[in-house]
Image (tube, rainbow, N blue to C red; front, side, top):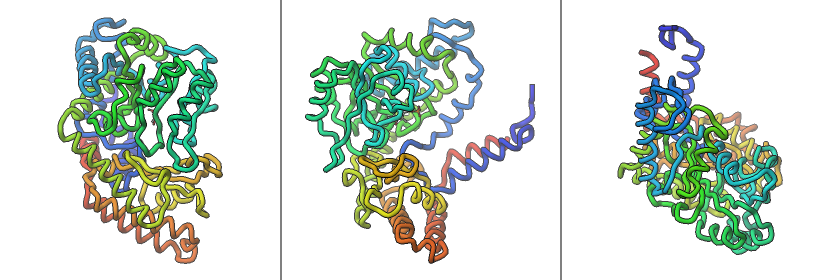
Length: 430
Ligand SMILES: *Cc1c(COP(=O)(O)O)cnc(C)c1O
């Protein structure tokens, strides 16, 4: 076996990881679905549990030598149950998409009717987009937000459910800045005899500490990722009522996956332990305070936000009536060291690869320790860039505004060092 260090054996990959680490340290991360894990989560994710095959579930594996990974998976399950108060949990899905796939395959037949939020209104690819497996295998009918206030009208949703008669209703979103009303979703499901799945991939951290209502009492299935506001390793998870437990477990393995990623399950357990600490609730409160500060400052500068603001960690800068697209702003922000993603907005008139929106989120900058003052500074930077590009002055002033923002980004990042990446760089150098 190769016993050289990564640096010695593969300087190319070593260099790439170092440059990625520096990018994370030196730029302002506003991608709403990203976060920075702790050194403890990173250690578990990079551990020797990656070597172990453990198809099956604790106590019922198809392989020997599972005594320690069994302990890790049991601990992950116990902590997840404590965190979310669910009856049953499966921590094996490799990603949020696979968690959703497992729920669909456990309760639907090919061609069944399902309702999910339109992708361009904030939904996720796995909520029925035509180019995704969900749109290809099932008969998805999408619901949308209202044109006037850009939020879901629940009376309309219930009426639509009664007309469509889906077997499953999917609630949850990737770019919906407002709180979701799970009680009303349950009413919609009950009105047409459908099952209800709630996908809390984005808001799991807020739900865990009670800052967003929990869907557990209302939903038949709750899916999530573990790497967004929950701040764990990249992965997925399914929570469900006891009556669906055996079906869900069977559908995850052998239905759609083979061996679980035991190192990632161990890292999930560590992240859940972190999330059970009082400090984590404080962190989630600061995510919301920061989102409020960022949204209010942007609106104060005259920028438009979808639905006028946010009550979560995420917001959408709307460029629907602006001369400049989301794609252009994403590029200009990136040049200045601010990382965000272009995103369609409801009733977008531009193409999905161009878009009329930019999605902004506060989980990652909050992990760095930034507060409301820094959010106002970031809003001012974003405003300067949008105005610069929209007015075309970025061409006449030779990128002076962009260069000025880049300097401010550097200064801000220096004031808030990122602990995980220095740890990672140090451990790589060993
Ligand atoms: C991110 C996300 C997912 C999928 O997560 P992956 O781990 O990227 O597959 C699913 N649903 C929603 C609502 C999401 O935001």
